[in-house]
Amino acid sequence: MTLEQLMDKPALKNTRTIAATINSFVLLGSIAAGVLLTLIVNVRVSPALVAPASISVLAVVFCGAAYLHRTLRSSNPTAYRIRRLEGRLTVEPLGDHRRYHYQRFQTVEATRDDVRLVELREHWTGKGSRDSLTVTCVKPADGVLLDGKVPEEDGRVHRWVYPTRPLGRGETLDVEVHQTHIDDVETQRPYFRQGGGRYDTDAIRVQVSFPAGYEPTDIRGGVWNTGRPLLHNQLIRTMDCARTEDRAAGSVTYSVEAQRTPHHHSVGLFWTWPPSTSPQGRPSAIPAVTT
Image (tube, rainbow, N blue to C red; front, side, top):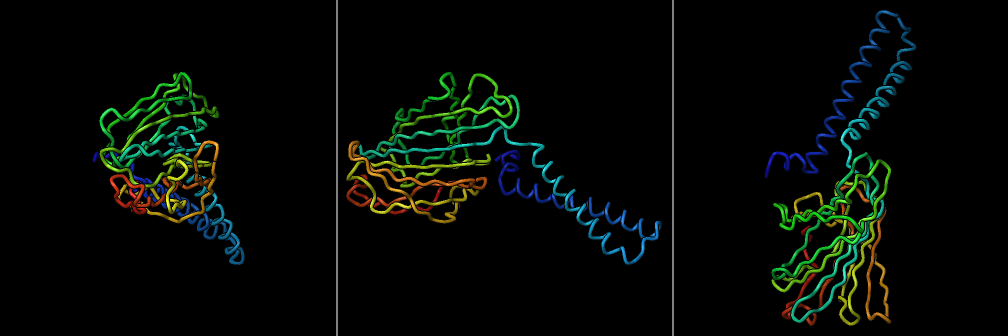
């Protein structure tokens, strides 16, 4: 792991932000104390006015520190915020394994000028045979998909969509990416979740569809802290999910939604496969969270 990768870890980034805020309070507090002491010694402020003056100075210090903290956070902002993120996964039986169709819909709003790349960071468990993975960029129509393909040290695959033009501050862009893969080499674990990572994310919707008669015996929604290493992600809480049956299409869909999730938190679904539907007849229980 390089020093840059280490310093980009969420825990260290938060620590730097907290340290900068503490330094701001110390600096402004020192200035305020100096001003207050000067007033008492040189201007000969009445002792009765010391308490009100102290409260006023502390209020100024607090407001100043809050402003400085906001300035520090905005001095290196992310290139965009995610207005809407929707992930759809369709699971289909395919012999002794499964096929997965994944669709990601994302509306981003540029928070500065000259934004040229929209990041897509995914991690999938399971493995498929060579050349069984296909990934395409549907929106923008003239967009170019830059695919890292190979998982990095943390197991995640990084991709970017280049809209072939720069976005201006406040401009929005719809991004849609489709992926199809199979798990004929190693079975994919039974969960699916989406998150905005380090980007401010207003709304997330996640849905998983199964053929009628092939749905899991137990499926639940959840929120995870994904800022930790993949093997130590935490399930923060479970949540109810909605079930919709489409008899015409012969499918069942489960979905969850969330608003304003914190950075490095994901929302999704996890389930249990009954032994009769598990590849190679192996029971598949609700997994330990790994992404």
